Length: 285
Image 1 (cartoon, rainbow, N blue to C red):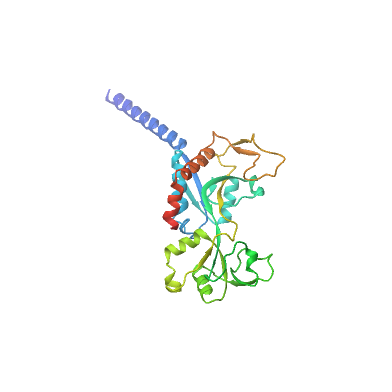
Image 2 (cartoon, rainbow, N blue to C red):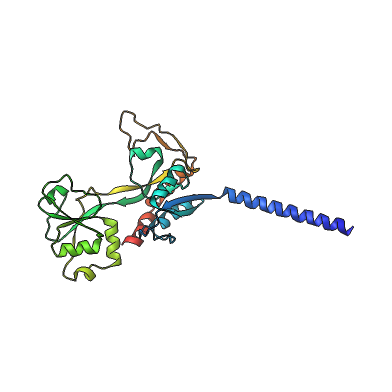
């Protein structure tokens, strides 16, 4: 009798464990994980060096992912590896990616609510620059190996410097070794926040920022993998086949039933509510 009772108890315990494991497995399988791939090196304030994922991107995208009942997972590898993983769907998205029609085969471009702008930095004595062609006869400072924005402009002297950063550029401008430095405005704001200019230039000098020289503000898009399990698209009923394919005129758009669509909608809401700007200001201003 005792043996039968003991056997029955063991069977009961086994059933309870199996049921508990089944429920746990279902919850685990049903959990929405959205992965963001990013390079290994320090790109503060966007993201610190691996394995530290803190930064603007994590704060922004974790909020958007949470809003659609998912969890953000960050994958850190070399940029080449991450982009390869993006094309195969091993990671869901890359946080900032320049649009091109060629890239549409592998990724879908989602608006992030982030704006970017390039500016010019010079001494106060340089007249306002609204287009780079006005720099004829001037010396421009260019980081060695970076994009040459002046290649089609005649009579510009290019001073290429290795390991160029804002501190070195500002020092060169102050000493009149160059007249103009082309830079990302967000990165410049972050530099100013980290290190006040008077520690580099002294209290008697400040640079002039040319806001209208370099193309104005542009939207930043993220790249969402077309191979991601969270991606689904459909034919765009508003596509104009007689016009060129562009970010505003795509043959296929996100399907509202997909997590990718919900993710984009969450980012749009964060921007509309001013939350994206608030996160940006915490890091850059």
